[in-house]
Each structure stands twice: as structure tokens, then as C-alpha cells.
Image 1 (cartoon, rainbow, N blue to C red):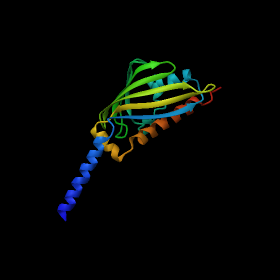
Image 2: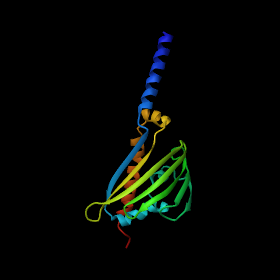
Image 3: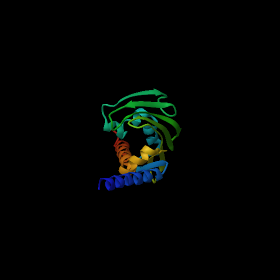
Image 4: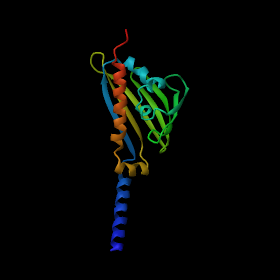
Length: 180
């Protein structure tokens, strides 16, 4: 009986590891929202990391997060290094490319809780009269441990939920009536 259970357990673990190994070597997460504001008004909210952090959902997850800005004030070379709780982790985000008012590309280098090096892209596309479709996307490698975790946790839903919250907050900031 014990031998049968042990063999079944080894078989289940082998199947699980095999399934994890067969998963894609990269990931892509993307969310979009339409905001009633022109792209040239939204672009600075993304292209300046200080302004980006006013609506960044990860700062809301850890209000005590510590961070340091360096490099350029905005655009390529702007950097924000951060250290937060377990949910947020420790890492660095840097703007690597910008095309006003259409896009901003960032490099996100996570050190904790897991090392990861991902590319983050924001695209802004005019949509109708005075509106903009803002898309927040992230791409990166999926090493074996990420694939294994992905068997149990849906990373697209977890990260996507954060992107949705951030985009919603950006929308509420951008659509807020100007103070008289």
C-alpha cells in the first residue's frame, strides 16, 4: 500500500513538472481603457515617474514603500528604485524609450521576491473626439520556476488586476474636472 502511494505521488509530481516545463517560455499581460482626455495630456502622466507614481497601483499596495528617483526627470533615463513589502518586492523601473504622445517603454528589473527582467509598454491611441485608448502591457521571460508557479496561480489575472486598477486610477485623475 505504501509503495503504491509513493509511486502515485512520484508520478503526479513528474506529470506536474512535465506540464510546467511544457508551458511557454515567455509571458504577455495587457489591459486597456478608454480615457476621455487627449493623448498629449496623458503622456506626461506616464513619461514622468513621479507623476506615474501618483496612480501606480503598486504604491497603493504598500504605502510605506521606499523609493529613490535618479537620472532624468522624465523620459529616457528616468529611474525609480523601490523597496516594499513582500507583495511589491524590490526592484527598479527605468524609462528606456518614449514617443510623445504615443508611447512609453520601460524596463522593470525585479530583485525580490523573484528576479525578473520585463519590458513594460504604454501605448496611447486617439479614439474618437478627445478620447484616448491607453494600453498597459508587460512582456518577459518565464523561467521554469515561473512556469511552475503559473500552474497554480494565474499570473495574467493577478498582474492584469493591478494594471486595471492603475488604469482606472489614471482615468479618474485625467477625467477629474479642473479646479476653478
